Amino acid sequence: MVNDAVTRMLEVYLQNKNVCGTIFCRLHFANNEIQHAGIQLIRDKNKQLEISHKGFKSYYNFYTGSVEKNTVGGTAAFLLIDRQLFEKIGGFNPTYTECFEDVELNLACLTHHRKNYFVGDAVCYHFESQTRQHKDRIKISDYEKVVAAKKC
Image (cartoon, rainbow, N blue to C red; front, side):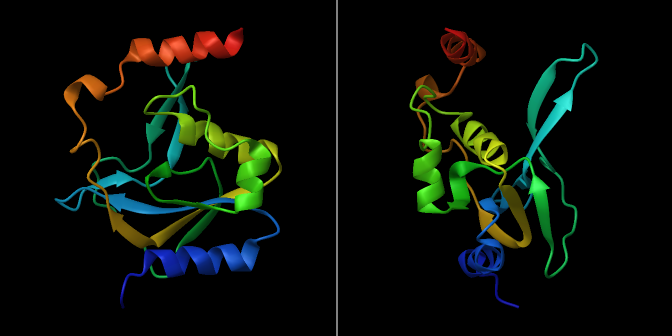
C-alpha cells in the first residue's frame, strides 16, 4: 500500500466536510519514532493542564483505515482545514511566535462545534526544529508572555 497522506486526509475531509474542523496525520522523526500523533491535554498531579504530543517517541502500530474523530487536534506542521472555517476562526493567532498557535486553532474548531480527525494510516516525516537557529526556539517565558497578553 502506498502512503499518500494528502489523499487520505482529503478522503476523510470529503466524507465529513459538514462537521470537519482539522485533519492531521501521524508524523515521524527520521529514525521512525513518532513525533506527533495528536495533541493531548493532561492534568498533572497539581491539577494543572499540560499540553503534550500523543505517542511521542513511541513505535506503536496503526491499521489501514484508522481514523479517530473528536480528537483535540494535531500539529500545524501537516494540517488540513477548510479555508472558510480557517478564516471564520481568524486563522493562526500571530501572538504566538513558534508554538501553540496550532493548539489554539484546533480548540477553536471544537468551540465552533467541529470535529478534529486523526488519520492514523497517513504518515509523514517531520524534521522538527532541525533548521531553526537555537536562538529561535521557544522558551517557557515566551509562552507565559502569550498567556499574560491573552488575559488583558
